[in-house]
Image 1: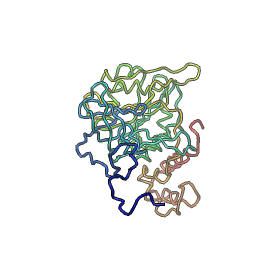
Image 2: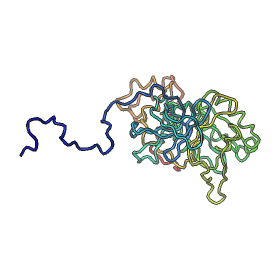
Image 3: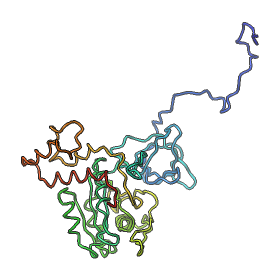
Image 4: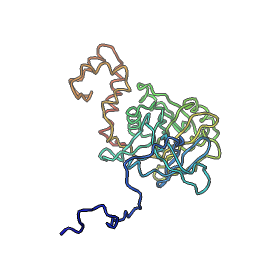
Length: 336
């Protein structure tokens, strides 16, 4: 039975109210052309601390961004209260395109990748020469992640007063990785920071390493005193450090336009997200030799053209060994 007659445009027709208000729905989103530019410094439980001009602003992500998450190092556009005053809250409405993305997974079987930092130029891999003992497999994995992300690696070896760096230098010498060697005394006096800073000027550098290697101590020596973080110690029984850094934080270098990103200590660095074919890009002397490789070549099989390329004298055999060692890293656990 028809409830209404022919004239369905009568004023007395009842309309179902919109539970979310009377505003009509639309797919048109504001352009936010007047949004301010900012940089994400740290993320804590859904709140993001951003640098906007010369002040820090607390912000949250706009719903319209969906599942797209902003991470430390991201360049973002913000609207709302940008005063930076206590209890003020801005809104991130846009995440700009990233120049680089450093990722890791919990382990090699984990399908969920985690973004460590965005827009970094360099990855400083910090390892102690003793107390705790160096873990070359973890270093290898960090190198693979750096090469995949397009970051320049920097190897920082601490506590040289407890053990010499010769073994590690021999292990990584063929990779032509820049390195710095420091002692505990240099860390405490700040002399180590002066040496390391020569590699950091004008760049955004992410610092990674497992707990207790002196990573945060070094970062503290590089940044203004009022921005320094709490440091811990190495457990005498387990030989492991305590996690004093619980979230990634971007900090400005003292008197320079560069940035350092201190990250929580890691005990694993999964590479489930890594495309092995990208690792070869870190070996420009070997890459031309892959032209004659069979399709989907792993570069570690009998038909690999790199063996002939090296045999003809185009590259040092040690470089091919280094490439294959890094490619094999994805198949090994850090403690192997």
